[in-house]
Length: 370
Image 1: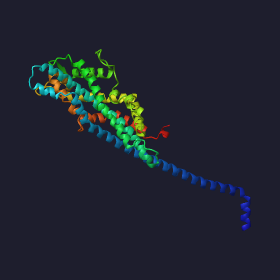
Image 2: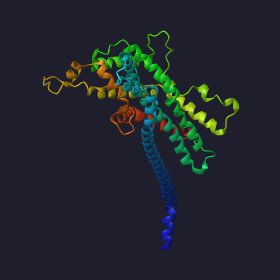
Image 3: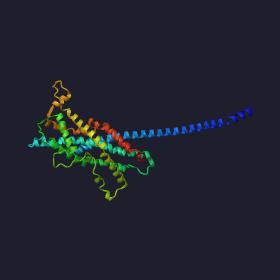
Image 4: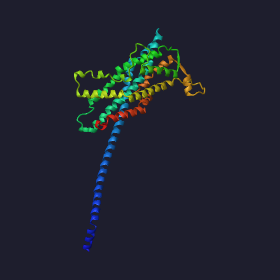
């Protein structure tokens, strides 16, 4: 029996060797495939966890952006009111002085200037903080991801404070320059308009559009007006001012801060930023006119069957009655409570997408970007 089995094995030796090699190879190949699949699964799971962690950090960062904007609005409002104090004029008018007409003319210019400047500065604050906090947020994510492995932090606390404090330019010198430009445009647009002249909402919208054209396009007819500056000029100090202390030597934190400021400046000079800022400004001025439209309703007793749009076009108010309305808009525009005005700006999809792109760019290590 054993001899017959042995003879069978000898006759089919090649087949047994081939089968054994095939079975063994399949076994080791299966083990290798299992190991590779396990490695791929672990890598995908790690990438998913990392992506989820980054998404959570990004969403938390956006909430911080919103809260920061709201917390800075009272400071912005007080800065505008301090430079454009219409309250002193209205108090003076109550005393019935002899130069009432002159005071009304000053009140006209100041009222329109401070509401229009409030729209500009609030929109700038929303977009600028989105840029700044997502740049710093991206670097903070990298710092947190690296843990103790990083040789040095990309955004230490002192650098964060120094970098974010540069927002004071918009609330200080930048705001002063912006108010000067807006006031000049308002003077050119409304200066010759009589207080008794009646304006419909559409006519008022056209007047505001002329002011915007002068502020944003430099289309002033005043030969003494300065050359046109981009709106970003009011948001950040000149690069020369940023580097003014370089001759005295910069610390390591100063170098990191200057790097962040230069990256921010590059972002503000990009076409995408200009598009987003224009979108936010359009929404801001549209919301301002929506607020004003509440005062251009036909009288309650007028039951003529006309559409809302037609009624707004037909109702006109003397400029003297529009001035107190426009004067009080700053309290709605720069309201720290979640008003419709600020909520509209914070929820614009282009702003969200732009913020996500910035965060994505600065939360990915440079070697992976390359």
